[in-house]
Length: 384
Image 1 (tube, rainbow, N blue to C red):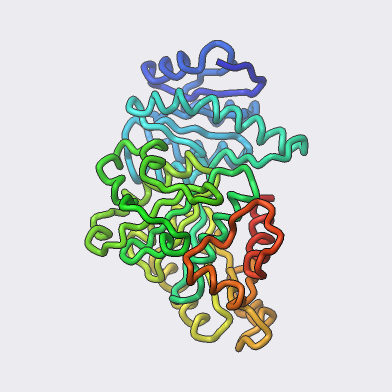
Image 2 (spheres, rainbow, N blue to C red):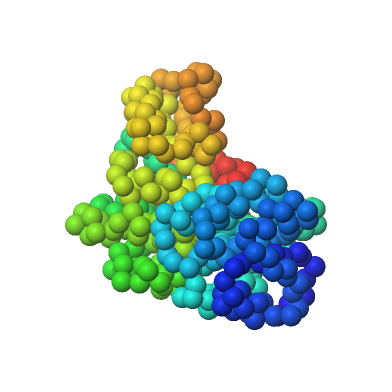
């Protein structure tokens, strides 16, 4: 299959599954087979590059994966589940598993994806040594844009940020409009299609990359993928939390960046997206009403048990000298760090919004408006 010097451990007490995996991997890779109960001892004895962890008969998987990641954060953990258990897979992901496959249904997907997983891991390892400069990320980043206030520019920020990531790197980027009732992304970047996220409903249980690419649209200039909203309140109600979680996890496995534009309210679908996110960008206008609404959002998340502290950052939008509140004042009252400051740019931005034109169109555009320049600076800091 391939030749590599990386160390791999296969933790399994299921003969059928681990024989399938060993046959798929072939003889060119060195892999050690151990019982799941012996993983902790093996990791303590010798750090592994990759651990393939087959769901054991007892419930030690989450605890053991947490131990692997605490001892060796750089170790890539691939989890093989025997059932499509929503709660288990969520807990496994939180514990630190970067990839998961459900057997036997996804054996073919594992075989197809495994060479890429190995290749990405090796390049990533080299990049840590400073020898590779191209963009590599083994596990896709889910980044959500949210604001409790409407009209703060969240959708134009999310779409331009996604376009910029795609144009300024070799990363695979998908933009998802989870404002399921009213949409907005399709207007912002002039996409006309009768296909939407809702078209994935019939295949959600076996969802894979090809399903997503069949339904997504390709943005003309940046060539990023876009999943648009059904723009239908009745259809929106039929998309469950499990649908949202499955969609985002499948996207994470196929794209480097999954950018989500969320609506300005909290329901079960939004809660699921926030929980699945690696990064939440809260878009804040520098004024008192926006600050009050953000505090209400923080209180609601505390009641719902949504973890914000480790993954929430502020995007301060529409800043200017005449703002009621200045950035230096906000730093004293905000719980979360300010990730980026975007200048108010009505003159530059409005023509694009009025025409429904993407703000970024080329890799090396000479005449970027101030808004786009600020986004570019921010995107570069994320790519680094």
